[in-house]
Each structure stands twice: as structure tokens, then as C-alpha cells.
Image (cartoon, rainbow, N blue to C red; front, side, top):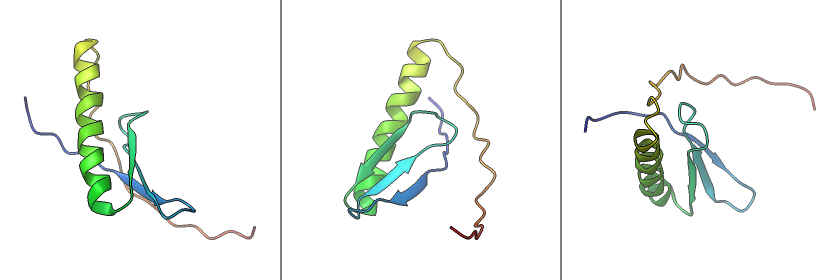
Amino acid sequence: MEKRKYVIVIEKDEDGVYIGSVPSLPGCHSYGETLDELMKNMKEAIELCVEVLETEKQAIPIETFVGTQEIEVLA
């Protein structure tokens, strides 16, 4: 096994729960009441997503995340 790094997008829902997702691993997401809990859960989720890809003999996506940009609009 090799070490891999993944970018996690973190949002906070209306109840204050942290939601994390990995853009380069579609469907890979988790949540936590605290950021520490979210990061623990995300590590487990990523490991499971990668394990499933390996089991199904699918290519493991290479991280392609570029960044985020904030934009202001009238709504």
C-alpha cells in the first residue's frame, strides 16, 4: 500500500454538523459533530472507497483538485 493524499471539501449544515466529501472520489463522503470526528470518519470513508475500487479492479483516481473560489451573487 502506498500513501495517498486527498482533498476534503468541508461544509457545515443547518444543524451545525460538518459534512465532508472527496471531489476525486465521487460518492465518498461522511459527517461529524466536530472537525476532529469528521476527519476520523473521512479517513475511514476514504480507505473504504479505495478498498472497494481495488477489489473491483478499478483505477484509483489521481487527485486533481485545483482549489476553491468564492463568488458573490445577488439572490
